[in-house]
Amino acid sequence: MHICICDDDKSQHEIIKNYINGFFLLTQKPEIVSRFNGNDLIKDCMSGISYDILFMDIQLDSISGLEVAQTVRRLNPNAIIIFISNHPDYVFEAFSVEALHFMVKPITELEFERVFVRAISKYNSLHSFLPSRFLSDRAVICINDILYCEGYNRHVMIYTDNGKYESVAKLSDIYEMLSTHGFVQTHQGFVVNMSRIRRFDKESVTLNNGTSVPVSQRRRTQALRIFDDYLKGVLW
Image (cartoon, rainbow, N blue to C red):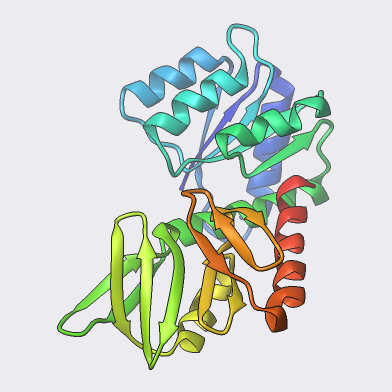
């Protein structure tokens, strides 16, 4: 795991490094790199260096953190970006680059740990695969690529960024494997990746690619509660 801290306040680097090292006290610590301006981070990305998790100030001396994040996102779509700032009014702009979270300085160790646990969970999802038995062969699918799953007659159609796959399985078994990776069951026949939900309506959810997935009346209340809890983790 490669982590980058990008902040022009050197004291902030030490605080976050200490929090990270305390989190991994009994296990192997990740590689942590410090960058004190956004241009150096952009140079890293342009040269092919890929960071798994980035802690980034949204206001940097030479270039805004949002501009840096746009470049990072373009070159490394799976980067987990966590903004840190003295200015909470930037929170909604931060999510235009699909930031995992926005933390307001000063950051407490308790708040850091809560957010970092989500980052580690996201990292694990990005590096986790769903083993599937298809009609004529076997394959593994990156969990992060899954948009939603549709179940019928002991078969599951798995829709991903790279196409769709038909698996011989029960949707309940698939959901059991995916529920810890940010998925919710909106209907007896559908399981959805919450990170891909753009809108949650009375009878359907709309994904960020425009796809509409049904929400049943029986499952709506519980699914909406799970999605609300997910959003609270993102925004606060």
